[in-house]
Image 1 (tube, chains in turn brown, cyan):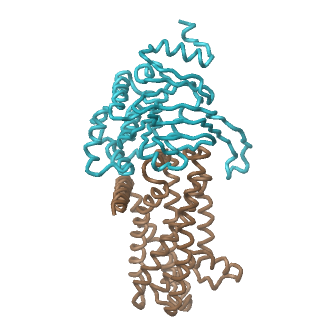
Image 2 (cartoon, helix red, strand yellow):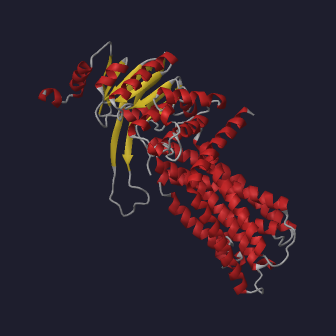
Image 3 (cartoon, one colour):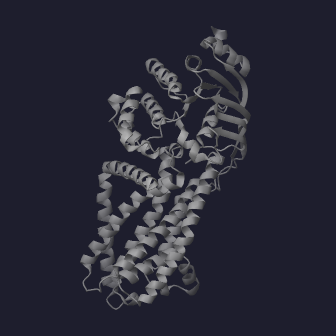
Length: 270
Length: 260
């Protein structure tokens, strides 16, 4: 209980720091909102241009794009948040000092990324909300509990991949280049813009082993009620397995990278 | 009782080609920062580390603060091995480095200290008073609510000392604590450092300043090219005597003394 209160106290301090710094960059919020609106408009007109005949997985193409791109962006921003925590601390010179505090390195990176998650979740809610207003046909009521479970498991997976990205940043100081390559590949392979079924067979296999594919499929099954509930249960099982494997792997890898940086004296490098 | 024990500690830095610098020049070399260094610091003592640039002073401090790990030997802090129980060590050590780039520039001095106090697990109800007291003691009370991006080098240095002391550590590590301070502020800092043993803290201070070492330290260790070249107790030694000892041990000519 006391430990939980301590973690909550540290989280509050990190959120306060990010909020205070964020208040100095208010134009950033405005440009993010404008960017999201422009993207929604582009997808709306793209769906109209493609026409109502194109219904991937039996659903309206705009709804398919809305969930795909919105959730994909949320997950990638969240993964990137972990890398950015380390990268910004390296560049601002605070990493070495932060790593001498009584808070352990993995805890600090996890908690620091939480405030980014909160910001990304607000962005996702805005994106879905604004997109729903543009939908011109009625949809079945979303499976909210299943959607919440998919979201929770997807956050766990994003956090694990984020810890791996943060470890890479510690080890190479150039993790963002690798993450950019991963993001570009994942954007193409995970069914963000078109169904995975449209890919050639070898690429479909690659797509299956990328956790984000199952995050997007699970979220579409939950929010748009495409397919049978058994399909959703299957996706949730896969997500659970990914989260269970990747979370310890991400934490252990980050701890190893941190120890290696301490051994090699590269903690303050950037 | 010794609070810090350096037991035959060696530290080697291997310079490798960066992973993503495929077209860069090959850079493979080694720097032996510390070579079989052994010493100890008693409880409530102030020890000054003297030595030329690159002699291993900052490396020594970083090894105690666990931002570096030794390649050979052991570093023990209040009975805890820095390699095996780093978290326990970090709860006991406060480090003040000279770098200005270790604060959040858009936050005020008070906000920076509040943030670090939370990470250092200072109880919430004590934080306000403790921060106000340390800002007052380091001469930053009037600038407490100023964004640190507007600070001078000297103010950054004072804030780094304030941050190191916020958790009331039993080991205080200071890297050239008065390098950017004017004489008045330096004297205030020396007073502050001399008070620390009264609160049960041991101090290890890296410095180039003979006046500082003789004004503050109980003992001096001389490092040269990663090796321990000398160690002596200071019982009222004057800066000029320390200077003579330094050049004698390091084996360099004191150009200033010769020209004078």
